[in-house]
Image 1 (cartoon, rainbow, N blue to C red):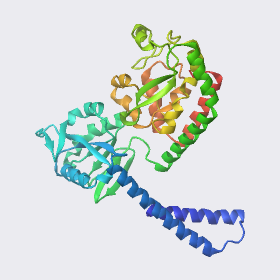
Image 2: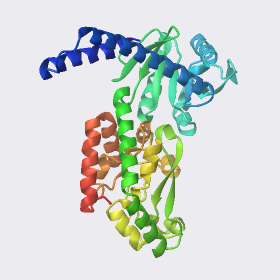
Image 3: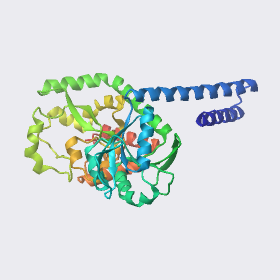
Image 4: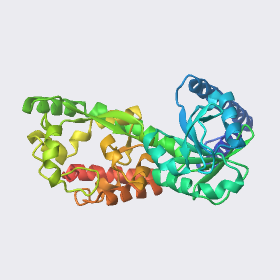
Length: 391
C-alpha cells in the first residue's frame, strides 16, 4: 500500500510539473483528484491480486526457493515452524548446518542435518541453494563470519533471522515478515524496478531480433547442413543462476565428433583455468570459422534470452565440467543470469588467456551493474561483431 501511495503521489507531482511547463490547457482539478484516487485504488488492487496469485503459484510448486538453514537452536525451530505454516512463502528447506560443537543428530523438526559449519563450502558445491538463512543467537554471531564470507564469494544470498543487525556487508536490507526481522545480505543489486526493466529489454530485443533475423537464421541453417554432417544446432547443457541447469543452443561450428577429439588437443589449450580454448581449432568447420568470426553462432541463444534462462548481458554460462573446476570465488559469477555478452567480450576477449582475469571482469560487471552499463556493452558488442572481432 505504501508503494502505491508513493507512486500515485510522484505521478500527480510529475503531472502538475508537466502541466505548468507544457501548458496543456484547462483541466478541472476535480478530474485530477478523481484520477488520483482511482489510480491509487487500482494500484493497491493490482498489488493485492499479484500477491495472492504468487502465493497460490508457490503453493503449487512454482517459483519456489531452496534454502539452507544455519544453526539448530530455538530460532531455527521457530523459523521452520513458521515456514511450514506459510507455504505461500515459497521456501523449501534443503537442510540444516549446525555448529561443530553441537551433537550432530539426524534431524531437527523433521529437517535433515547436513553437516557442521566447516562443511558449508562443500554443501554449496553439491546442492542447489538459492539462499542461506542464518538462525543463531547474538552470542554465536562471531562463529558465522566465515559462513558469510563464503556465501559472498560463492554469490549466494544470505539472510539473517535475528533481532540484531549491523554493518556486516555493503548491501544490507532489513525486512519484517510475520513479525520476524530478516536481514538480507546481498551480493548483487536488489533494485526490483531496474531488474524488471532489464527483463523487459531482454524480451523486447530478443523477440524483435528473432523475427527480423529469421531469413539469416534460415540461410545459416542451410549452409551448415549443406557443408558438413551432423545437426544444425549444438545443444549446450550449462548451469545458470544459482547453479540451476538449463539447455541452450548455438549453431554447430564443429565437426560431428568434436568432443571425442578434445582429449588429443588438451595440450594445446591456451587458457589458464577450467576453460578450453585454442586458436585455429582443427575441429571447426569452414562455415564454422565464418560464423565464429562474426559471432553468428551465438544467435540461437536469443531464444534462451526470450525464455528467461539467459540475459542479453551477463557472465558466460558455465558447463558442469567447468563448474567442477571453479575455485570458490569464481562461483560468484552464478549469482546473476548468464548472458550472451559481457565485459570480457568487449575488453580483449581474444587477448585474455587467464580465466582468473576473465572472472574478475565478470565480477566487475556484477559490482557495477546498471542499465547504462548494459547499454554500453551491447553497443560495443554490436561494433565488435560488425568488425568481425567478436570471435
